[in-house]
Length: 298
Image (tube, rainbow, N blue to C red):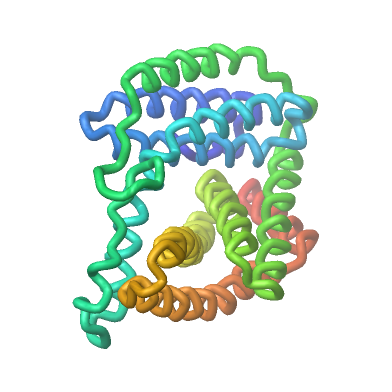
């Protein structure tokens, strides 16, 4: 049992166990032969760690901010290597989505081959080994800091508060994105959905099948929102190239196709999101607490 809360164990013991395991795995991620994939896995690990911290935030107090910032900043230091690779992958997925309807010859000339610095050509930038070494040292410090964690409260009430707070953030972000569909609003919604999805993983023992089903649907929503965000970044990069060369027809064709795909994704996200976040915060929290009480009687 790794990324899962043991509901009968103290909150502090759960947090130290899970964070310790995730930090150890993050250190192993950094030793992978493929540097870009190593960065990808490392960043995913940091997001899972930050999700757990959010789940127990009500009991961590000021320490939450210190530890959350620690893992956020570590992930940001290597973000460019992965982000550069994602642009090319996003372009390819865009054409694949409409493969039966388009002539690729009109689009392929605009395919970006972008380095992490935003220039043309070249593979994704590989972080220097020194960066990996520094991250490994910081992870070792983060693991040592686990012993210093102090919790102001314990029990499922603490977890329920953190769970409900993150749920409500995702619900609010959904409403804002649907009312004002900007790239920034959808990106914020995606971040909150991913935190809530990790919380459902952590708490799947509340009621395994429904929680796993919820996590699966949240992942589907997060994937669509992730694609929407990647397309927004791709559009900005292609638009920058079009500004430098206004007569480039392939770039304009790509921008038109991006707009179409983003609209399709947004239309798919809204009904799924409204199903997943139909309850108000208080009702959702109450339902989770009832799951816990029923499980204890079983």
